[in-house]
Image 1 (cartoon, rainbow over the protein chains, first blue to last red):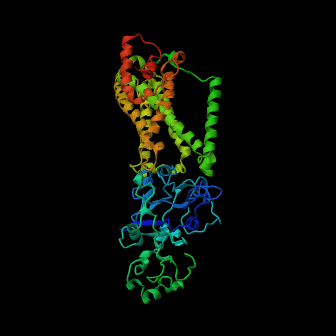
Image 2: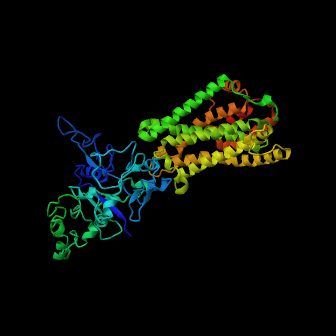
Image 3: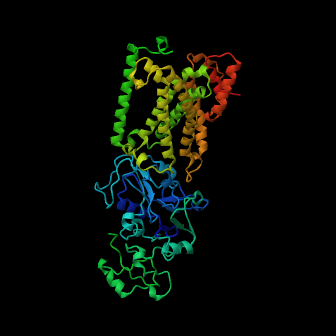
Length: 276
Length: 292
């Protein structure tokens, strides 16, 4: 079974908000709403540290961390359990999704979610430009919406937009049930936590802290499963894609799948022109 | 009992009564128009994004649920325990209960983003959701109230030739049978009223992801606050001249012990006190509130 999950390397995150912005563009998230946010741990406002400068007798205790937060796609999702009309449900591949034609807008799920991942369309949702920027189903006024792990992209074998557009390669998407996937390997190799583990929600989003990981192994817009020959963190030259593979995927105009095993895996071989 | 016209509270509406009804109708129309406006512009129209204005609706829901339970309990307890002296206020109590549960249910509607999809509570319910159970108990409770009110009044309605009797005839045997039915309805109404409270509490009780605010304790805090007015209203219904009794009660005795779950015990003490002392108006009110 496929069970999609996300690993976010907080040691890599630079707080640039590119994931938040690309999520908004990809999913036509209405003005004033965010499905994906990069919270600042530190000061009271965004991008502000706590503590003081080490000058004029200050404490020199400046401290700031970034906390990228969207729907955690919990294994034991409280929102799914409280939805009275089964509008919020867990897909077979583990993605927690909302049926926008079913949602009655009671917002019980928002009360249940401890991550504040859900937003409600208090009035007619507005996009800028008016027709929106992404190719996703429209959500009407009066329903709850949230991150879908870009299920419309995942269904086509693409990584979520936030993953593809993370310039620090801090976000890695993949199948948690596949032992060989990057997400599974990173969870095994690095120190990872889930948010609010004590609540028993068992999120499928894992955060790396402590030691920095090599990050997302490639920067094409293909999912890792599409590139099964490319696994740069494992040793051996057999991981280098063959010429045939390279020519197969050469239609996108770049050889960006050709990652050498000794290269920094997160650096694109060829600058990508965007995710579509 | 039936044909005595002096027992009819309002034989016909006078000018004042008609004005009052007109005013109420105007308020209802204004409310419906406001709701229609909210449906077109979204919940933002009523500031639902603000916790305070959202809380007003939810608080009033909880309040009216409490009032409703109080009305039904004060009507069915005497029936169930065969306290004939207090049977007189059963009808008014159930009427108030029905009105309150209707208001409580309607108070939820303006808080729902897409109320036209509420039919999905029947077509696609998730029984893990406490809200489904609360929806169910409110509906069940309303239907029970409606049935009970009709049961309590149908023979008298028939005696007065009302069409609301729905073809039921006023016979002695029928009245006897209705008394049995009333007993069993009261037996059903008491646990249903308690269930109404408890299930409403579930809504707050089952948020594993959230902290104390969402725990059942918050519901227990709200319980006395709503059952106090519930008792007051039920008391007004139950006694014909209640005001001096209410005023005579020492202040500061609004303890939280009048939780409706204690009701059967309280009802027993109603009977005990009723036997020991001369009947007084307002007595059940005081006993229910401050059973020692």
